[in-house]
Length: 173
Image (cartoon, rainbow, N blue to C red; front, side, top):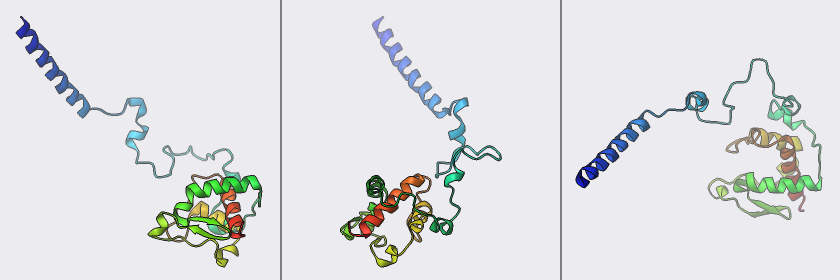
């Protein structure tokens, strides 16, 4: 009797493994969860298309069409201490891997990515002469060569916070 039970156990384990393999082969997303199964991977765009003629609430207040339009923008929080401190934090997370670290009006450390392809020196006179809107547009839409746009990731206030921090270290503070 015990030999029969042992063989039955081995057969049931084998049957379980075979059925699991078959189920895994046929596994699909649940019927109510197919929106991510059939779409392309996320590339910064929203997963579902917007409803026809709809606009997200508040989006037109901060919409910028181009870098040229952004260059004309006025900084609403020039030099505010809280804004500058937040800009320093955001710069460290999003910008310093390429642009490095700054203090006293000069670059003090090169970013990890900059060892292979250095970003521009933001303390150069060329960048000191640029408008705050220029930096806003560059952060939002990306740089001329390799810098990606962060418009999808950062709020307008966070853009200005980074601009304020850049102005702070450009002035040697």
